[in-house]
Amino acid sequence: MSKRPAFLRRLLADQRGATAIEYALMAAVVSITAISGLQAFAGSMDHVWNVLIAGLAGALAGA
Image (cartoon, rainbow, N blue to C red):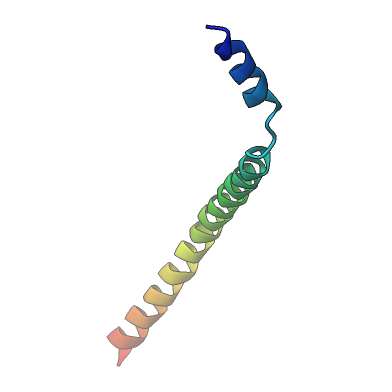
């Protein structure tokens, strides 16, 4: 039983995993930002495609 407190102290003092956690948090923030940006961009692209399709449909109907 006396080994547990020593193990916990060593575990809490160990900083080796901190860098990996920091990189994982940065990757999560970048991913969330990219997904949010792409969703906003997709809305504007939807409008562009609808205008393009309408123009093509009008051109093909008149041809």
